[in-house]
Every structure is written in C-alpha cells, then in structure tokens.
Length: 321
Image (cartoon, rainbow, N blue to C red):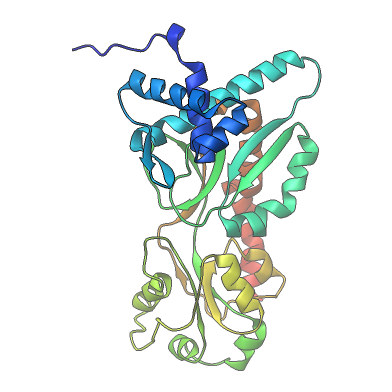
C-alpha cells in the first residue's frame, strides 16, 4: 500500500515551532514564555502535531517531559529547517550588508583546548561573518544531528554522514623529563611497575582499558595496570604528568608540541594502535552551505593528513633528541 505523504501546503509551521520550543525548554511553561503565547495554545499546537503524525512526541512524566524516539528523530530536522529559513530571510532582508552566521561545532575536549581553540582566532579574523557555538562533550562516536560540523574521536564507522579522517590515533608513553631521568636504565616492565599509571577514560570501555591493551601487547603480564588515577580526558591526564608524576599513554600527535618543546618526553618508543582516529564529520546536505564549507576547509588545512605529514619530521626529531 502506498504511503500518503503530508502535503507541504498543510505543513503545521506554528505547531512545529511549538514542538521545538517545548523540546528545547523541557517544559510547556518555559516554551510558552519564550514564544509569548499562552500555555494552553502551545499545548494545543503540540497535540495537533501528534494527531497529524499519529505518534506521541513527548513522554509526559509527573515532573519532566522526555522526547520519545519519534520526537528525537523529528527535533533536529525541525531545528535545522527553521535555522535555514531564518538565515535565508536574514540574508535577503540585509542584502548587501554583512550578516552573521552561527555554526554549531562539536569537538572533543582535548582536541578543542589543546589544538583548535588557541588558533580559532585566525579563522574568525578571516571570516568575521561566521560565529562559532562550540560544544565539547565527553565521549566517542557520531555527533548529534543538531551540530553543523564535528570532530569526533571514533573508530571507522559507516553512516550517512560525510567523514574525513584527520589522523589515526597512535598512543605512546609520555612523562615529565625529570621522572624519565630518575628511572633511566630500567626496562619497560620495571619502569611501569615503579611509577603511577595515568588512565584516560573511554566511554563504554573498562576504566583501565588502554593500559591493559599495552600490557598485553608488550607481554608485561606481571605489571598491575589497574592502579593509578583515571581522568575523563587526555588533556587532564597530560596536565597531571606535567606536574612531574605519573606516566600517561596518550595520542602522540595530539601532544606533539609538548614533546617538541621538551615539556614531556617519550621514555620508550613503544606505541599502541587501538583503531581510533580523529574524524571530521559533516551532514551531506550541509556541504553546500558556504559557512560550513569554509570552516570544514579550515579544519582540514590545519589538522588534516597533509598537515600531519608536514609535522612528521618535527615529531621524529623530537623523539630522537
């Protein structure tokens, strides 16, 4: 049986705006205040939308509103569509005058703080009409649908998104140079046994997963890898190592500047490849958006494969010093 499509002539635009507001505010009261309409009118809009599509969009609990699976599917589509309409109308209204375009960008905390944010001013200077709304959630995997551009820490996955590998993650052992000098001459097993291990948490994996994999790879079974501190991000782990104590197992490319400057050293040349990488992810339909294309190109220019290849001699020289 052919499905009957909703005719765009009868798209309930007010109801869709009401749905988006309720979803973002988490309440009918907050949404009604934001839209400057009565709560009863807002409620009628949402109910009419639910009747039109034949499913509930909210799970109405005693003290909370929670999006159903259908609501979660609809929200990013509605938000993006309304955003595009808003941008297009503003461009027409202010034709000939510079208009601001806000990009919602997602980056892992360590990538954002250590690499992107320090040079983000360069992008803003060259593209003053583009503003950045940066979010930095902890975790791995694909970004939510309401993000325009994202850098994610992930293993290769097949999705509908456009995905560009910036660099594959290669983990190495880093520590403070004073700590390395104090333990010079020890083999890897003794070095790890005699020092505090610093762990970086990866969502959905055991707390000590990374060190466990290295111990297994190097056949260091007597080493107790379950001791030491656990941090949510590699940046926090490295900050602790910079204090002079502890041994971190982190991405060598992410912290190449710390190695090149001598703030951190590699006491051993062993590496671990867990199959993760930093990927630049974009929605296919967004590639025609000028602002998104500009920011995507800027990210690839600064952090993509060509940049990594250019920096490789620097990293090699630092490792051999």
